[in-house]
Image 1: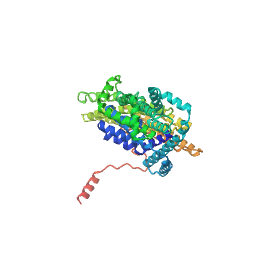
Image 2 (image 1 turned 60 degrees about the vertical axis):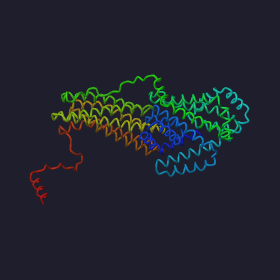
Image 3 (image 1 turned 180 degrees about the vertical axis):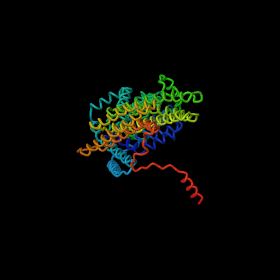
Image 4 (image 1 turned 90 degrees about the vertical axis):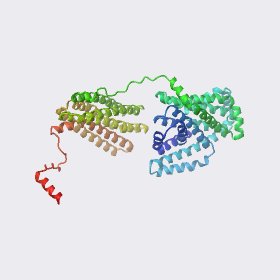
Length: 549
């Protein structure tokens, strides 16, 4: 219950303030000292130093600034532990009631998040109260007492045990409160609790190191630096546990409070020492990490200087780089197609990286074509230039659809553990396979501007639209007939089918200018539309007379 309550608090605060936190970190962050304060603030809100570290790292807070932020996050954890160490279990029913009321009556995302956080906090206080009650019988257990005494007899074995347990729980806050409860109930001695606190801090520092093990060097520096500082701190504190206990006796006679105060003293001391050497330590770690062998990212290869290249050759070079864009987009499509049927945790990261490359291609080719359009071109070359501009823009938009919509929809589907029906999976699979069929046709029209191929592309669009609507109608009919329909699953399926249709339209758009120049397109599909009449010389004279009047 304690862990689950903590998760509710974290989720609620992210839901209520996640957007503002992202903006604050990304746009207001500067310097190591501000990073220290930011770490304290984030941990007070998110109730987890690990969550603070991951959020900051995802937004680019790395190196010495990331290390300073982790030190601040550790201090923030001590403040949360200090607050929760009071016996506030009497407030638990009130906080749960207020939280439930706010969730039920929430009018926006923020109110719902605050309500969820209050409910989680109430559950945490209730769990701590139950923990204190359940720890009382352990006080008289000879077996349990003997096991702990034998463990604490070897200080570093006790520290290692506490570090491992904290790592498995993935929360230093839970471990600190658990130890405070055991010490307060007399199950273990105060000095033993103080010693175990050192292991808790090492274990919590190991969590970000493990989570960032496959990240770039820049993202690994801060977690490794934090682990080194806390290990050094534990080595420095362990011989003086008895003396620290004596000092804490003058501050508080409550054993549980002494454990929490030890946690606070340790982290403040480590943070103060770490801030003195944060730059040197981060630089030292960076030089010791193995050098990364990064594969060169794809980039346009054939965009020669417009001034020194004939227009026809320049357009041919653009086509060659556009084909590379198409290969990148096809790989993205296959990744998303795979993510529709299998849980794919790395999907979002891979799609984001690929879309960044496509955006770079689009930016360079777009600038090249605009510069080329300012040259002395024939009418056919100008049309060709405009068609290529349209085509690369549609490819870039298709990449954005995959990254900003479809990937997020699949992520939501996985997080909510939603499984589509057999019919829905077949509809999505068939629609995606149609995309893979129409994509080569689209590139063929882009390269050759063949009229018959353009006609085939438009025919493929009409067939797709017909089948697409049949799938939507069939799914809606099945949902309405079902005994227990899932509205969230229905919405996710509809949104994914909408995005697939948008992708299909991006690929077929290249056919329209080709057919339009051949006079094969109607001005409008509306039967009531009438063609505008050409302006005659008498109309111009009448207009001039009206103006003079």
